[in-house]
Every structure is written in C-alpha cells, then in structure tokens.
View 1 (cartoon, rainbow, N blue to C red):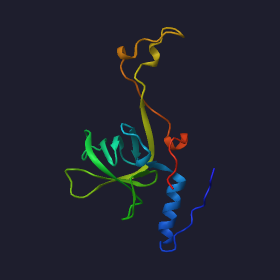
View 2: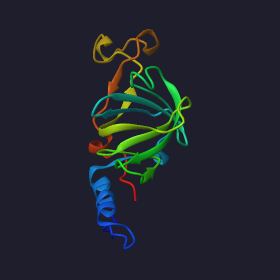
View 3: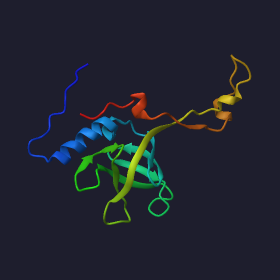
View 4: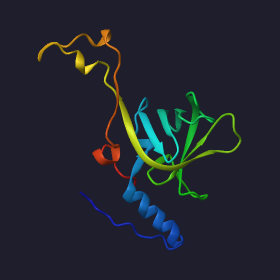
Length: 161
C-alpha cells in the first residue's frame, strides 16, 4: 500500500490547503468511481437527498421540498467548502453539494453534507424464507430497500487522490 502525504501547494492559501486535507480525512465519493444506477443517500444538515447516478455527472435527485420534491435530472458539479472553490464530480462529507438544476439559472448548493450512503435494493424480502434451504421466488416479493452503512466506513470507495 502506497501512502503519500499531502504536500501543501505553495500557491494556495493555508485555508485552501487545510480544506483539501480535511476532505481527505473526512472522505467522500468520487463520481468517476461509481457505476451507473448507483443509488446514493446524501444526508445534509437540513435534508436527506436520494440521487440515482446515471453516469458522467448526471443524476436523478430528490429530497428537497422546493427544488426537487420529485426526482429531477441534474448535473452534479461537485462539492464546495462554502466558497467558490469546487472539488469537481465529488460528494464529500463536511462539504456542500452543488448541482445544476434545469429550472434554475444558478447552481443549487446544499447545507453541509453529514453522511453519504449507498442504498442497495435486495430484490426480495428476507423474512419470506420458509426454512433454511427454501426461499420464496424473488419476483413474487416486494423489493426491500436498505440503506447500507456508510460507504466511507465500509471502505467501498477509495479516498480521492
């Protein structure tokens, strides 16, 4: 395992270099590492968003009562620390998600992200087993959706380089 220490960039302020280090410590999800159809649950200070990643930076997002009460196709720009510097195609804890909504001229910026989780659809009801070796047909059962433990805690996604 190659561990390289972050070297502060001499042309960036201490505040910016500190934010970069903090994003490495707190972790996040690089959209480039996600396969299409990945479903993310993004908990911010004020709302819980559901984003169905479609590829590149496209996603169907919902969870805000005004901007996206129903799924809407958006372009996820990335995350900010609350200023103008954007970490492209990245959703980071402790940062603010920024996405472009088709009905608004300026990007939507969320409150601070507290957690990012991958939601897994199991496709069957685990309680429907009749004995240890017999499971009812998955097509006959409703889909059970489960929020998995934090992708960051599970190590599902590598921290960005």
